[in-house]
Every structure is written in structure tokens, then in C-alpha cells.
Length: 445
Image (tube, rainbow, N blue to C red; front, side, top):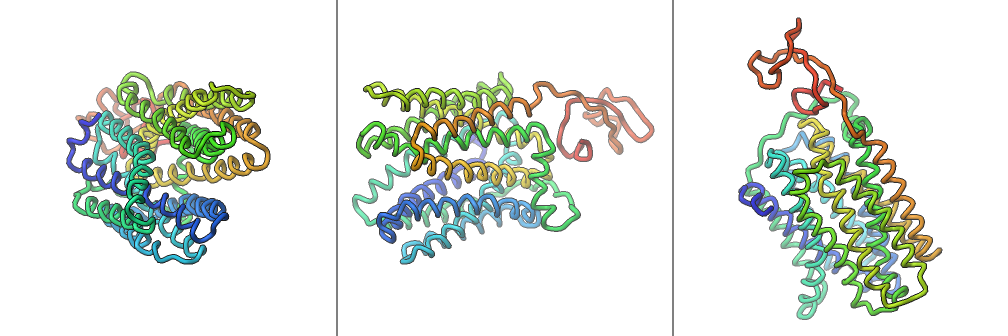
């Protein structure tokens, strides 16, 4: 899998992603401590509001950026977003009011909503070979999982020698490092974006309309919801399971989160070979259905009266959640890449970014509110129902086979490889094949 790092452009972009993720991880720890300094026992409410602001920024800003991204050089857009994030990181140590935290979090996450979909749309252009692109997706998944494990450990080590406000300097350096790496990279020229009638709204919703029009992408919407249900259960209620359900110390919380990350990493490492033999549909749908089964097992664990077996069972459930989520999320880029015409790729990735976070905006509060008011068992039942229903919907929405579409091509030379074997008609060439979305087929349904 590491062979993809031999590509110099991708190597720099991956390096930019890694250093930015480390900076973001340090900021997460620092914000929690800052919230406690500002709000004391109400720090949880502050962080919950900040998380809601983050998701709202992702849902609202990403499609707007996708509407205008084709008018801006992609490298300049990503560097500008990194510099905005660096400025926010530089300002955070001077915050002394809760509302200032909210404003800066919105600015930070709005810049991330501009950077991330643009970055995701660049990688298929840098790595046109599907095998290389699959390896890159696995590398990205590993980077996210390792960051979730490495950043808290790094923060703990730094906090032993400096105060928490100094951690924002690490965030600043991470974003500046990302900006420098992107600025030093020559990116391939993107395909010209289509001109759209209807103004900003039409351009901002182009990616969403593409998702609603293509069966595989409609299925991806349901898959995103299944993943959001599982990840919300892990993110929001891990500490509740460890401290209240298992009656263990806070030091055991990282073990639960680590089990989730380990399950995700194992799958990410295996997927490049698996996807060479098994299609995306099989892997992604089985991953979603696995999440429903894990919720059923978690319900049995949660309903149990006691026993030393509950900790290993919880860790196994969390690892299975990580594996199922990785089975869905890692190949998702391949699906978007194939389903969207090249010139609409940025809008499609922006829509995937926005719509997937809209699912988290739904499931995070659900996981927190139900856990606090109705208890863990009802939370498992509700989120498990969401995951199972979404998984079943994804199976129904994604056709197992795709019929061939007969169509014509005008203006292609007789020796063009795409019309090899096609029959000559008045306006060009006529043939049929499975639906393809690229520059040659942008006008075909």
C-alpha cells in the first residue's frame, strides 16, 4: 500500500493531510481544556454547542464552496483555507469569552469545509489509476485513525511540560506546514466545469442533485446514515459505557476508542487487495449491515446484569463498529469518483462531505440526548434501528446489476478507442455499455 507514496505530488499532499490532522487533534484537546477554564462544569454544553456549530458549518459551507471552486485555482483555495485555519489557531489562546470560542470554531470549520472536499477532488486527478487511488483512500483512512490515537498521546506528553494554551502553537504549525506543502506542489489542471443556469443556488445544489439522480449515490446517502449512527454511539457514549456501565476509571476510555480505531485500521489495510477481487457494492453494503448486527450484540451486552466478560465484549463491539465503518467509508471515494463526471467531481465531493456530516448532525444529538434521558439501552435500540434501516435502504437503492445503455457519440474519429466496434449512424457512432460518467458521456443519463 505504501507504494503510492512514490508518487511525488501525492506524497506532498498526503504529508499536508497528516500534519493538518495532527494540528486538528491538538486543537481538539486544547479546546476541551479551554472550555473548562471558561465554563467550568458547563464545559460539556460548550463543547456540544461547538460540535453542532462545526457540523452546521460543514453542511452549509461545503456546497457553497463547491459552487465557486471551479472559478478559483485549487492550490490557492487550499492554501488560503489552511492560512485561515492557522489564523484561528493563533487567536484561540487569547479567547476569554465563550461566544468567542463559537465564532472561531465556525471560522475554523468553514475553512475546513473549503479545504477537505477540494483536497478529496484533487486526489483522483493526481492518481488516475484506480489501484493507486484505492491505496490512497486506505492511506487516508489510516491517517484519520492514527490521528485519533496519536494526537491525544502527543497532547498528554506536551501537557507534562507546557500549559494547554501552548498546544494551539502545534495547531498553528500543523496548518502552516500543510499550506507550505500544498503551495510547493504542482497540481494537474482540472477538467473545465460546466456552466449552469440558475445562479448560486443551482451551482450549490448541483452535487446534491447528482446524488439524488444516481442510484449508487442515493445508496451512499443511506450508507452515510448507518455510519453516522455507529460512530455517534462510539464518540458520544464511550465514556458513559466505561465510567457508568463498567464502573471503570477514566484511563480505560482510550482503550475503547483505541479498539474502534484498531478495527478501522485493520480493514483499511486489507481493502486494497480485497477491492481488487470484490466490488465496492459488496464491501460497502456488507459493512453497513454489519453495523446493524453489532448494535444487536451491543444491546445484549447493555441489557446484561454484570460480569467480567462485558469489557472484552464492549471492546469487540467497538472494534467491529470500526471495521464496519471503514468498510463503508474507505471505498466511498471510488464510488463518487466513478459516479460523477470529471468536471463535476468537486461538486460531488462537496456534496458527499456536506450530506455525510448532515447525518452526524442528526445522530450526535440523538446519541447524547437519549443517553442522558432514556439510558444506554434505549440509545442502542434507537441508533441500531437507524443503522439497520439505513443499511436495508442502501441495499434496495443500489442495483445489483446495471443494464447497458444504448447511446450515440458525435464528433469522434473512426479510430477513437471508445467507439471500437460501434456501428456507424448519420450523426456519429452508436453502441451500448454500462453507464459511465466522464467527459465523453456527460450529456447521457
